[in-house]
Amino acid sequence: MIRFVVRRVLEAIPLLLGIAVLSFIFMQLAPGGPDTLFAKNGRMTPEQLANIRRSMGLDRPMHEQLIAWLLNILRGDLGLSYSQFRPVSTVIWEVFPNTVLLMAAGLLISLVCALVFGILAARRPYGFFDNITSFVSYFGLAMPVFWFGLMLQLLFAVRLGWLPSAGMHSPEGGGFLDLLRHLALPAFTIAIGSIAGWSRYVRSSTVEQLEQDYVRSARSKGLSERRVMMGHVLRNSLIPLVTVVGIDVPLYLTGAVLTETVFSWPGMGRLFFDALTVRDYPILMGTLVLGALLIILGNLVADLIYGLLDPRIGYA
Image (cartoon, rainbow, N blue to C red; front, side):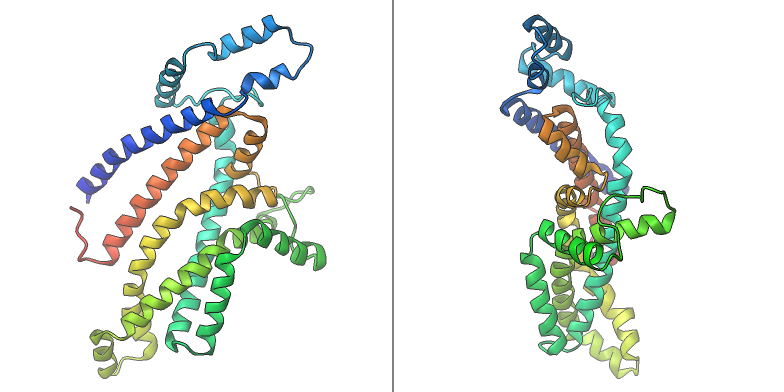
């Protein structure tokens, strides 16, 4: 396993480097630039703008800027935010735990709901519950995340008043329960697409496993249906789901941008959106590189779990 992990990490290095280079090039080719933020200030003279460009290194050729930026990344320096005038690493790490919390809550909700709905639907294929979950799943896959979030806000925050509509904490402060109340709507919003898709994977995999000989053998030995499902079928049904979860991890990062913006959740997605509106390129490139790193790590963890669930898979 150690050799497998080392090999995957070494394979990820050029991939991460390529993503960093492409992110830098795209930001350089984007219209406008950080100096335009200061140029909007009519009181600045051309000499002052030239000094700002020189201090930022924007007057250097693009390849020199790229090399300097990559070397700074290796030292853990992501640059200085153009809009906040603070180190990008500091700005990102302030909101990074909030995004991890949101993603973890969304993953937990998705996995629990997908397993419950998928297994119940597989117990009686093409029955009433299976048809209902199929319809709801297709609706969930087709529904825009931001629209679903707005509908949840309208129902549970505005009409019913059960949950807060935005933010992470109440103005008057609060403890763990207050955090959970603020987390409920954005976590369910970011999870809805995964619940819809993953439940169908679980359902199909479970139906396939229930037709295998080992299930008939277990039932013939007198094992209860619950023990057959939980002790034999469930583990084999999880194998394809693990692969899908590893592939869908990027969707949580992209979904976080919309979800955190709708619910004013102070995370990386909201930070990325705010940086995009003011053309804060160091923050944009920093969040892209960190997001790519999280995706690579997520796929690595998924491969490891896949091998643990299925002993036939070797860590070659």
